[in-house]
Amino acid sequence: MGLQPGALPDFPWDSLAPYRALAIEHPDGVVDLSVGTPVDPTPALIQDALRDAANAPGYPTTHGTLALREAVVAWFERTRSVTGLSADAVLPTVGSKELVAFLPALLGLGDGDTVVHPAAAYPTYAVGATLAGASALATDDVAAWAGRDDVRLVWVNSPSNPTGAVLSRDELRQVVEAARRIGAVVASDECYAALSWTDAPVPSILDPEVCGGSHEGLLAVYSLSKQSSLAGYRAAFAAGDPALIAGLVETRKHAGMIVPAPVQAAMTVALGDDEHVTAQRETYRARRETLLTAVKNAGFSVSASEAGLYLWATRDEDCWKTIEWLASRGIVAAPGSFYGTAGDQHVRIALTATDERVQEASRRLSKDR
Image (tube, rainbow, N blue to C red):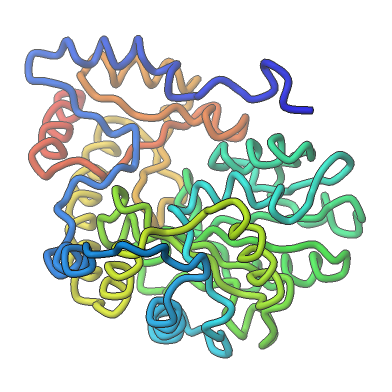
C-alpha cells in the first residue's frame, strides 16, 4: 500500500512564492539568499576529469570504482582524522539527499520504528521516516530516546543545516554510545564539514575519539556539492560500517541507484585535490564576513553559525514577519519554520550568492543602520 494523499508535507519552498514575488519588484533586482545552491564555477580540473571520462558505454558499478573508494578513504584520513576505514566500506550516492530520504527504507524500517533527527533540521530527515512508514522524533536531547527499543535510526547533522552549530567529539560520542546500547544505526550528515569558520576542525562520527576505533553501526554521509561546487554533478558518498554498506550496495543494485561513471571519475579527482577546497572556503568566508556585519548592523542577532553556508539570524519576531521585512528590501531568505518549530523566530541566510549580490544585500541592509 502506497502513501496516502497528504502523507507528505507540502514542499516548503513553494510557500515562499509571494515573498519572492515581492522581492523581485525591487528596482535593483532580487538578492536570493534562500537556498544553498553554489554559484561559483566548478573547478577546471574536475570539469576536465568529467570530460576525460565521457566515453562510458558500459554500466558503472553500484559500489563505485576502487579508485573512487580509495580516494574517499584517503580523504577521510587526510582531512577528517578518520583511521581504520576500508575501501569496501564506502558507497557513492546520487547526491546526499536521496540517501537521506531513502535510508530508513533501505535499512528496512517501517511501522512501529522511530527515526530521531535534530530539533532544527533539514526537512528530508522526517520525510525519509514517512516514506518508510516509520515515525520521526525531533530532539537534540539524547535522554529523550536513550533506552527506547523502537528507535532504529538516529540522524546527527554537524555542521547543522540550518543553524551552523558544530557538535563536539564528546557530544557525538554520547550519541554513539546511547545508540549502540539499543542497537540503533547512527547516520551523520557531515556535508558542510569543510566549511568551518573557527580554528577548530569539525569532528566526524568516524573519528576514533568518537567511535572508539569501531565503525559498527555508523554511517557518515558526505557531499561534494558545497566544497567543490558540484551540486549539478550529484556527487556524494556514505562510509562507515562495512556490513551496513554491503547491505546498501545489494539493495541499490536491485534499484539501479548508481552514480554515473564520468561523475565517479570527477569525484576521484576532486577528493584528491585540497587546493580548490581551500580557495572555495575563502570565497565563502569573505561573503560571510560581509553579510554577518550587515545583518548585525541591521539589528539581527546571529546564533551558532560557526560552520557551513548559512547565518542563523533572528529579530526576535515570527520568522515570516522577518521574511516580509527582507523581501521588502529585495532579499529572499529561508524562514526558520521550514526546519521545525525550533526555528520559528529565525531565518536562514545563505552565503551562496555572487560577490556582487552579496555586496548589494549588504548595501540594502546598511540603509537600516
